[in-house]
Length: 429
Image (cartoon, rainbow, N blue to C red):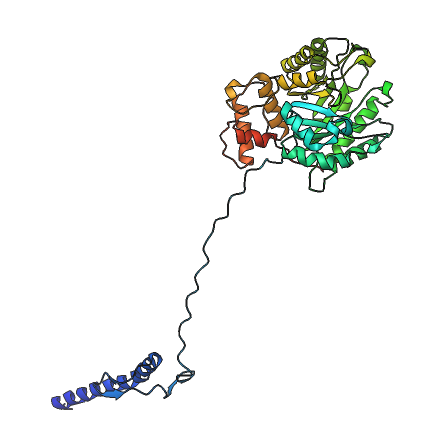
């Protein structure tokens, strides 16, 4: 078939014109709607070159989903909601780790009758303890004959002492005629909680002699010690208070009693003997049991027990300090607050031994190093008890610092010292 070139050109032009008109018709409602949404008026030029009046705002345009009017405009995009600012929570503050409880280190004093101890005034007790440089106190909580009776005094003393960084150890006098009752009473004291949440920092069992009415045998001693340990768990600090070793006490069951305890506190009252030989024997004999030995010195008048009249003088008290330190004690304490005279108090205050400073560690004496090693170890951060500030001790201290959320420098700075000595209620079963 023969084509007409002119006709083809004409048809192409018509097709182009029709296509442009269609595009104009298709786009018009969209343009109108856009202008209506902005409130514009007047005329627009279509893509086909035709001037088209803009539909007034009151008019309506059909669109998918309904009629667009001024009362029913096209929806506009919702404003973007700003994301809340990202905040990084502050790290928890430094705090002493609570892996296990500490045994006593440094200088301590025993309280028997609260009413004869600064009149039972907790503020006065704490003030004097701080002045003397005491790190811990032993407070009587009960006995087989009197039951648990220390609650009221503990309720007032514990908060004040803890605020001052002084640990409080309860002590009890078990007669062992009913060891199960003695264990139950000890647990009662250990778990006693003050209204504001304080507990004692450890427990000392004062296990005396048969001559004092105590049913002490290898069987009763081991039953009491072993079952007390089971009752409170492995992390709770227990101290066995025992008579000083002597030839007259060859049958006292030291090993059976102390098996379940963390430390041993012998009552080293020298009476008519000298502090040097009495303390040396106690440290050597009991040191063989493989536990820290923390001797109790005499600060009372022993005349009624065969000693010379009067409280031991300054020289005797300092000899006791020196001998205990020479044989590896991490601390000492004295019986008792109500019996010590001014000379005894001043001698305890002045003694440089068993003071626990911060760095520089290179200047620490052997007694100070050992006290910190015992403290770290019983808190759950093992440091060999070498009395030397070695790399293992530095490593134990750095581990403690990490657990306390402070820089692990391995240096015993003031903050680290404060956290080491700060009382924390020990874990108890």
